[in-house]
Image (cartoon, rainbow, N blue to C red; front, side, top):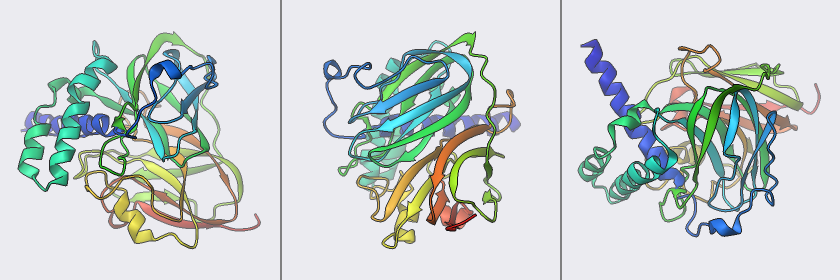
Length: 332
């Protein structure tokens, strides 16, 4: 019985990952031709301490190989749409090309059927996912980031091959990944010798207790430690992450709450809800198992006085304690 349950969970993870791949391939409708993209022109640095990731349209540009260990990634979203970058550790022997050919199209087909209300056909489409997709490990990444914003994260990466993707949908329901927003990166056995950074505040994420943070958040620059106490599979086939958003007086909290569900054919589409400024965060990390660094990630934030929220990309985050609104005061 235990093995059957584990197999079912792995199958759900398979479906959720494939959905992510297909989703991120539709970040926009007119991907920039690769010949027009030059990593040097985009400012991508080959630096073992800070690795730059740049998006100018439906693309993710990053150096192809880095050493393993604690690594800081600086994501510069120069496009006109909100994006994130999820790091998917692929099973041994699999590449991004395998994901593009076997996973992304399946998720797009499934999403298209969902939009038509044909759930039986959608699940039949998802059933075409390759068995190896269940072995993908979500390994963090930058949270949702509004256009013309920059965010930094620090995560611990094990050696292996990773797919970097965004699966926000465009206004026609096409995943950004479907439109080309997926790329590959190899993490080598060589270690970079970087040490774990020191945080200024901490948030904890759990399927049981939701998002927990310090009662009083001080203004200023912060390095926020995201601690994933557990991980699970929700009804949209994925786990939980954490995103930082600034809310202005026009923000509709109910609209944002509904928008954070990619499996809703009317949600998780560009443009983002009015009055919402995404400032980054941390994508799905696994629960504590194996490497003790796997469930912890760090992201930067410059908190000015105002109203903010931490929110997870799960169906109805309010009901799960994963939509936490807080105020940053004008003084410490």
